[in-house]
Length: 136
Image 1 (cartoon, rainbow, N blue to C red):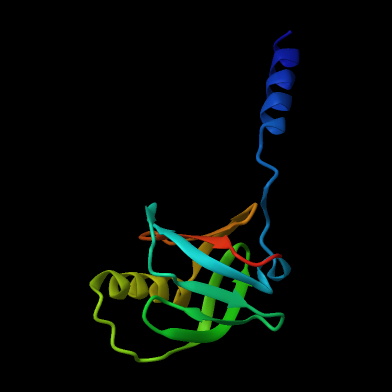
Image 2: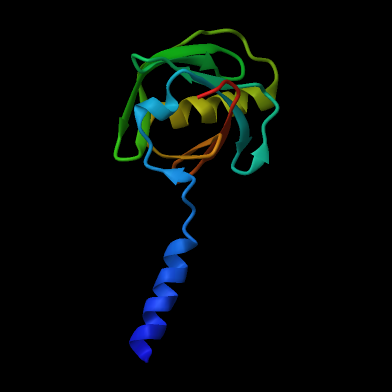
């Protein structure tokens, strides 16, 4: 009887797993503009975004400046290599702080997940959540 109860519990638990969370591949990320909507759970108002093209080149706006680079995706970990950033003055303190976090997370390895139209990049210190604003 214990085995039947265990099997039933296992089956119910397995069915409850969120099937909208997926193994992230380049195809899922490409040709979509991702708009930053929160940093560490707090709503972002700076309009930062990123886009990855079919060659895995990345470009976007980090809050004060434009950036570009080459994305690398491996085992649900993501980073932008060879990143270049424009050097515009940023007088708004909130924008500058968000930009520093944004660039830091992108230029280092972070855990990546995609659930429905949301992309999340997480490091030990930061969590950035993006929403797809163009069709995937």
